[in-house]
Length: 146
Image 1 (cartoon, rainbow, N blue to C red):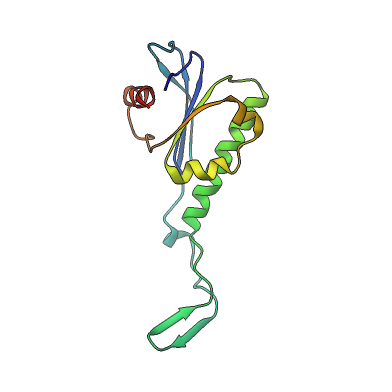
Image 2: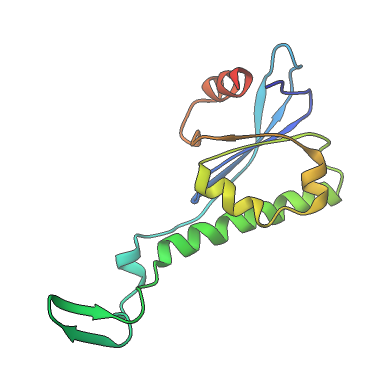
C-alpha cells in the first residue's frame, strides 16, 4: 500500500494508539510520531467482583442465567471508539487528507462501527494486524508490502 506524503497513519490496539505522519514521500516513507495515547486497562479479574445473576442448580453443576461482563474487553472497545472519535475531530479540523489505519481485527471492527463519513472519505486503507509494539521501520515496511 502506498503511503502518501503527509498521510496520517494510526497504529492501534485496545490499549494504545500511535499516530504517525509520513514526512517522506510515497516512494520512501518516513513515519514520524505525532501523538501517543495509552490507557491503563487492568485484567478483568481486577476490575469486576460480582458474580453473574441468578444461578440454577441442575444436574452437572451450576449455571447462570446471565454471562459475566468482561470489563477488560468493554474498556478495549471503548478505547477503539475513542480512537474513531479522535479521527473524526482531526478530520473536521482538516488535519489530514489521507488516512491509513493498522489495528488487530477485533479493534478494527470496533472502530469501523464508529467511523464518521468524514473519516471514511479520507481512508486510504486498513490493515488488520497488531503492529503497536513493532519498530517504526517495520511498520513502514509492512504497510508498504500490503
